[in-house]
Image 1 (cartoon, helix red, strand yellow):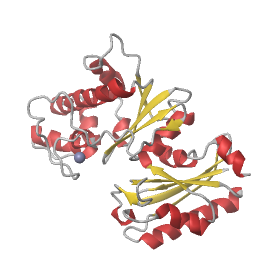
Image 2 (cartoon, protein in one colour):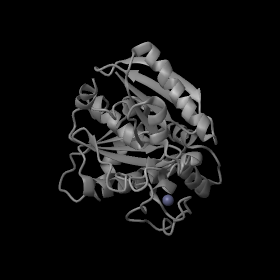
Image 3 (cartoon, protein in one colour):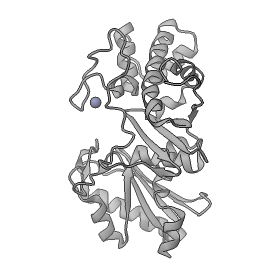
Image 4 (spheres, helix red, strand yellow):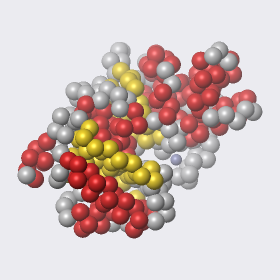
Length: 304
Ligand SMILES: [Zn+2]
């Protein structure tokens, strides 16, 4: 059995998967925002609750940040009360076992590569476009974590092949300007639409209005699709994935899957682009499922 925990900014979810990937337990509690000790207790409580149902299990945790290989401490978390904390050690102490921790985008991509939209595909680039823009690479079932634990983090690269008005681009919370995230996140789409029309509405409403035939919303969506195609092309040129899987709130916009692959051919360094763009199979559950999959079959067997 595998337990996965998805430590989100507002809610913390737990799942238990049996060896076939079938869900045997699910729990959800509000994240104790700003309180590290309470966050530890919340995770431990969810693990104990799951184990009362499914018995002893491995534990993987997805966080909105990562554990620094240099220090063993959490870094890059927008849930800032985790930063600088030895989360992995503290959970291992309390649960009396090794605990795996990974970035939430890594968990998302792993879930979709193991048994989701990209099941069985050799190289998968998983993208989350929602409140932020994250990414991760899974090759032959393994997340490419990398020496700095930032593998696949494309959201804070600059928008490639910039068009007039895109450079230097909007300021980003990371201190730079014109990051991919400032264009492709939900707030990024809203900002762009507001700059063009004066209308301050969220990304889902822009997409809904475009689908209903609103010309201004359609133009905003077309700009978004062009940017997504350019940003993904730069990844395709480096990683050459078989599949790109989209997750997060904006992955629910149907037209992206038809239009973006038609646009990226101009930028990909290949006569033909075989890469496909797919919607996440597990939607919001991919993060918590992927956290469970941080432990492989062999490793689970070794622990018995
Ligand atoms: Zn940035």
